Length: 224
Image (cartoon, rainbow, N blue to C red; front, side, top):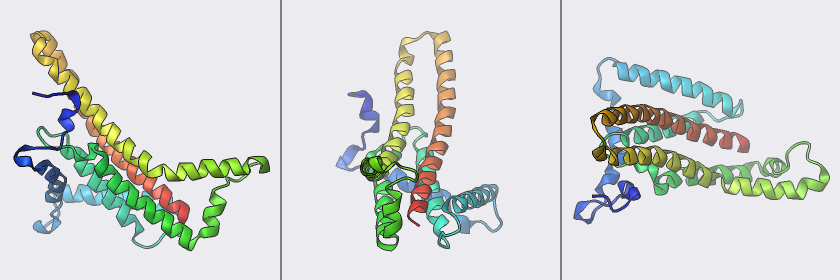
C-alpha cells in the first residue's frame, strides 16, 4: 500500500537497510566479456556501440583532445544506460531517478573540467565568458550570464536525468493504480497504453544517457 505517489521511489527497504541501491551494481553483471570464448551477439552489439560513440565523442572534442579521453564518456554513457534499463524491470530500484545518484556523476565531472580549464587555460576561460561579437556595453552583463550558466551546469545535468526518469515511472504508476476500477474492455486498452509507454521509457532511457554523455563531452571540449 503506497502512502503517496512518490513512495515508489523510496529507497528504504526492510531490515532498516537501503539494500535496493544494490541495483546499481547489477549492471556490472551484464558486462563480463572474459566469460566468452568467442564474441557473442551481445559483445558484437556492445563493441559496435562503443566504436560509434568513440567516433562521435572524438569529433566533438576536436583535434586537441587527449588520447583515451573518450573512454570516460563511453563508460559514463553505458553506466547510466544500464541503470536506466534496470529501473524499467518490475520490483527493481530506479537509482537514476534520485538526485544523489545523478549529482554524484555530474558534479565531479564539472569540477574536474573547471579545475583543468582554469589551471591550464586561464586566458581561454576568461575569453569564453564574453561571446564573440558582444557589444562593449553588454560585456559586463554577458560575463554575469555566462558565469551563472557555468555554475548551474551540474545541477541541470542532474535534474534533467532524474526528472525524465521520474516522469515516465510516475505516469505508469498512475495508470496502473486505476486498473482495479476499470472493466475488461477498458483494462485491455490500459494494458496497451502501458506497453506503449514502456517502449517510450526505453527510448527515454537511451536518449537521456546519450544527452548526459554528449553534454559532458561538450563541456570538456570548451576547456581544452
